[in-house]
Image 1: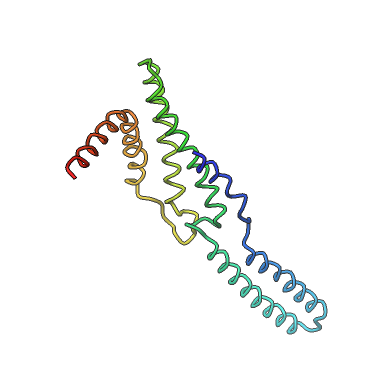
Image 2 (image 1 turned 120 degrees about the vertical axis):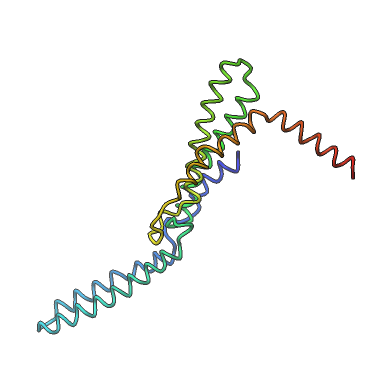
Length: 191
């Protein structure tokens, strides 16, 4: 749990923009200033056209370099490592808390009716948090070069099958733990 909480705050240690991008953005103003000064000193229409064409070439070069830096800074389709950690950290925290809630319900509530109610509520939390964690890690829809989304079958798996497995694992945790210990002892006995 401490790891997940630390993970959510780790974004504060990463810059919002890379040093390379910040340094590159400082080259924009001189290009524009140079163009403006040249346009003010231009005498003929041909000279103005030549200045604009030259400036446009420099701006295209600037934009291409900026896009390359931005593409290099991307992490799984997110614009930077900071944004990736922020997006997945919150979802990981909510998923961990919902699992924690599920295991508390299974192990510490003895009233049958209350247990059923809280199991359903925790199941809904696990489904929702699991879906968003799954989406934030695997769906690279923020990447403009990837113009599609997951197939519907992936969503069905994340919404129905995975939380059902978590639910039954939590519900039968004591039985699974006893069975696992028994199997482990049998393997040790044979060896």
